[in-house]
Every structure is written in structure tokens, then in C-alpha cells.
Length: 207
Image (cartoon, rainbow, N blue to C red):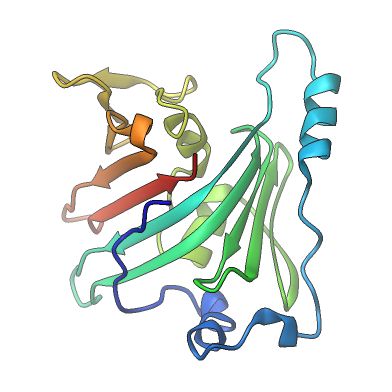
């Protein structure tokens, strides 16, 4: 497994509920409200079998997620590295976030009419996936597009511009480099501007 760079600082108060426990070598089993069980590979197979022919098929991905937020205005730089499991499609998926010790910390789930965060404190519903990722990860990240990016292609729902280098393109304000996906590495970077902070996302997929 590739190991991302670890940076200091944590992002959202919801993450702060459990991450310090992990870094103190305690696990989330001490929390009294367990998260829902993960979907299994059998559930994925069943979902594929029931899928409409020609529709987007669900996928299963896992690895490490590294997010680095640049300092911006009066906001200091921050970063976090988490394990993740993803199951579903860009339109209906669930993303389980894991502590550095491998304990499940939170689940982000979305479908057309429902976006939720489930952690040891219970379930919280959001108006949009952008609002969910901003509150959970510190910035509104293109989670739907990331599902396609992790498969080495631009999101089909959004315009994009290929760059000179193979496997590199710009989409939704992000420069996406999929040229090293054969080694399990994806990089997406959003440049800083007067209206938004710079963000670097690195994903290291298990093979």
C-alpha cells in the first residue's frame, strides 16, 4: 500500500470528536453508538446483478486519502490523512472514512434526494454533497467527480479540458492527474485565488 504524507492539523469539529482518540492509541470501539455495518462484496455483487443494463455499474474502491488546505487570508494551513472505503457510483454512493489505526470514523452517503453523515454521534442530513464535504473535510470537495477520477476519466456530467500530458485534464476548477493510476496514485489540485483557498488532494488506491 502506498503511504501518503501526513501533515499536522485536523479539519472539522466532527472529525475532532474521534480522531484525537485514534492518535492517543484508543479505538472507536469505546464509543457507545456504533456506525452502521459496511456493505460487503456480496452486496456489491447483488447491486451489480440488479443494475439496469447500460446504467452506471457500482464500483468498490479503497485506499488512503490525503487532503492539504493551504493557508488563506486568516485561516491557517491544515491537513489530514485518512483511510477510506467507497462503494457505489457517483450518483449514489457511500464513503467510509477510517482513522489512522483502521477504525471506522464516519460514513458519508448520498443519493439523488438524500445526503447524510453518520458517525458515533448519530446521523445528520445535509442539503448537498458540497455542504457535507465542507463540514466534514474542511472544504467543499468534488466527491461525485472523484468517483470518476479514481477510474482514470473525467466526470461525464461536467465539461473538461485535456492538457498536453497524457492522463491530465482540468475540470470544475481542478487540475487532475491520473497518469499514475497504474501505480494507484491520483492527484487533484485546486489553485488558490482571491475567493477560495488552494487545495491538494492525493489518493492512494490499494491494488
